[in-house]
Image (tube, rainbow, N blue to C red; front, side, top):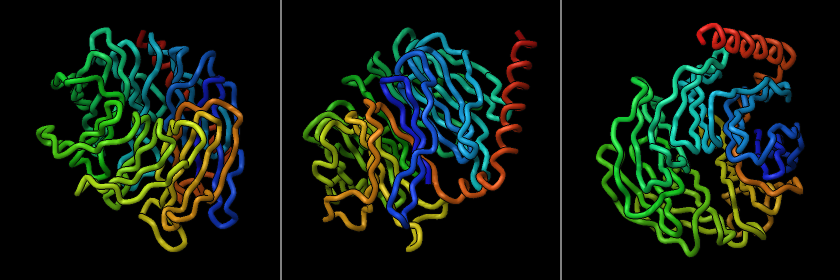
Length: 340
């Protein structure tokens, strides 16, 4: 299993998790951006990071090497998400959002910029949620709006005015529900009509969230706790209190691609602004000590992760992967220049 984190100090960190030895091992670290990293995304083979330098950087996960960068944004890149079709090891698209209110679609085969959609007029997008179908996305921005973006047609479908600014939006695993966080409150909505089902009341502002297959939503933030919510009842299932000594900036659910088994325990990873990345075995919620921990000594801003199965497949031919991905990226850049 692999984890990737970004930091204020411009570094991106890649680590591998071995559940058997209960250890987090550094895979790579690059001072990749000219300013702080705002967001990271990871597929089975490629990592992307976006920062305040208006740039997206790409990395080959299996070869632990840099692939290059994309420069089609004109403002801070605030959110990234890969779309990988079911049962395929490679992503099809990279979706990105920025502080100018735009959403961009990139073809992951060659990393060719396809189109940019103006979604929120001159309002920074706080977060982006990609539907499991890959056909649409939700964005929340500083204009106090929730927008629905049609990724197939490349246009905004609608924009809904909210009572207050939402800083976080996530789909559940099925895509039938989505969650929005506005300070201490997380609202649960029906995807079909955006109807509110109920609210989750937290003690302090929520900064990150991750849905799980077992009907739980994990949240973290200023309270330094990892809270598991039952999204069917709106009640707290359990809570890892004082999971970190500082605010939690990222949560990732780590499972095998086919679900949790005895050999592949259900794990939750968290990253804090104090620089620590910790992995927790949620079957042992009474245990205060994390399963594994690594201190990056950086002020972490974001966290992403991927499963074990595809990672093993990709590492069997790391050198070939490195060459092929670079060729595809260079081909994409050449195509983009020709079109311009």
